[in-house]
Image (cartoon, rainbow, N blue to C red; front, side, top):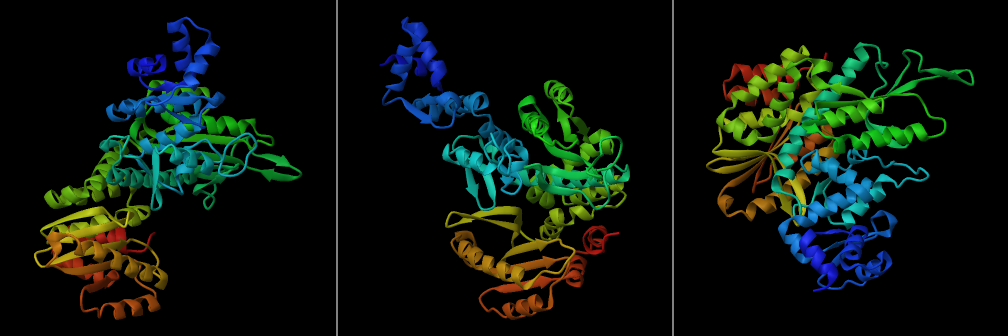
Length: 483
């Protein structure tokens, strides 16, 4: 067994710089000689190269992949010597292993555009993909379950966190408008400012930060990112601090008001943010104490919708009432996010068993089923569109094509072999005329059923379960036009 292998067995995987120092100290040889020993190490010693500063490599043994020490070691190596890739892992960890590809760059300190001296976010994400620590799955990036615990890669919990984030961001928009911090129609979500992506951006003309340049008034900008669902640590908030530092170092720097919205924060993270001039937007301080319980309830209900709606369906009713009480009924931004819970509530009262946000794989491609309900004589797959506008023909065509794929999956499941297939499309905004005509034609299929519901149809389905509270919630949150 070589000196390198002995150290790796005893100490675990590590970067070449640390490994060479140990070889040098333990064998009383020069550091240069130790570096040569390390560089010449052969099987069973393995290495990862091309990602770490100072041309370092990460050394490990096959056994480290089996006992979990590989992921612990490479995360530490990334944290110290490849911080931009480390930020990708932290972003996904903070969102239970998933992030939409359109949102991941907001949680990194890598620019989305070309910026001298900085790798673009897409290049950094590709490095994480090459390391096999993350994977691309449909429209999402996800942590590779080979290295991360199942509890760290949970799509349904991610959905709950995502719904909570979207809800809080929209509350933040209302708050910023209400106090005059930003103009009414200027906020945007997950957009670009100064080469970087942010969860929230808006110009601001208050105070002394706006300034005149060549005779025209130039605003300051309110920038915000959000960490919800866990206690944010120093490692978690580092991406935001680094983004701010890079902005301040740019020429022609525009004045900014940086917010980081959080529900919980460690003392170390709190101090780091304060030292860097970040406004810490605690949810309970921005919107009131009740919002902390609301966030937890919202995340839990979305993450465990299948079990909750079946065993305790009135918990969904209670959640909607709690949201209404805290927001004065202004819940229109939640309509699209939780409409599937309302449809799930309907099916839970009637079917044998069901699931919400069920993920299946067909030819290795992921498909999400909003509501999957099993009845004695049929399997029901419901697509839920909680939109203010009618669905287009293009959207209806995409849904019909998806049904073909899903049918092929159902037919492979032995438990559903003798059950008829029913596909439902629930649309709070209804359908455009050509889309409606296409659905009428599709509904004549003989081997399976196509059903579709606009607002009157949805109200009719709700009346089938004779629950006045449910019908009231549908009317108030999902069907009426926003105020």
